[in-house]
Image: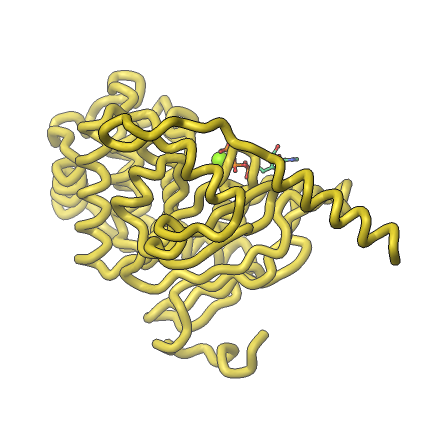
Length: 303
Ligand SMILES: Nc1ncnc2c1ncn2[C@@H]1O[C@H](COP(=O)(O)OP(=O)(O)OP(=O)(O)O)[C@@H](O)[C@H]1O
Ligand SMILES: [Mg+2]
């Protein structure tokens, strides 16, 4: 680790989150890199969108930040550094489970890709929203009730629904409950894994607006995973493009969307319909990949 970021004090020069050369492999097959040498940063108050096709390693990258990789997987290389203004700089991948539990939900929160499986069916949504407020901030009684009602209000759900169970809510409402849970403790970093994919476009627009407001009000950083370039255009400051576990391109939104350099990014953008429907949609052409692979294998053969 860099000498000047090992000090356990807040340092404005260090980004809120820094992933350096992160690789993730199955424990039983350490040669099979599911995520390879991934590096990027997120600053406080900024949103980094991660895009890429299904299976490209987006969720594993996000889960590694939370210390929530499945038991069969491991962070085989790299470092994840979190620069929290109250606790100073922490190397997340070196923390114990107990230390991580203090950060999860409080300083770094995540909206999971599958909200239906992330809510407990036997507990009311109000109870589930309140859990992290009690655990991390010691809230209880009327103050807790009022905070739960205000969080539900923020995501557009009537406070009376606090007593509902997850299966009494629609899919979109459950997704909004997940968002209320994630922002309850006003985290410094919010990780959102395709949080609006299951929602209709009007609800999606409301949620994106809400997240953007929270981001600026709380100077929160966001790691936002999405397939949707409309969403990227709307909310990203920076964009990371992943393909088969690796970052093929990253940069500011203007750079990546305005003048994509990598053939895969160019191909992805060529698949996005324009507002007037004038652009002819093209399927992704993987010719560049075949070329890259044959160049690589020739290089290997030659030496
Ligand atoms: N527990 C696991 N054991 C082995 N391989 C896994 C495990 N979890 C994920 N993978 C593999 O790792 C790769 C990356 O998965 P990941 O879930 O990060 O993809 P993703 O980019 O989030 O895709 P999607 O857009 O479909 O959500 C995939 O090939 C997946 O099959
Ligand atoms: Mg995923």
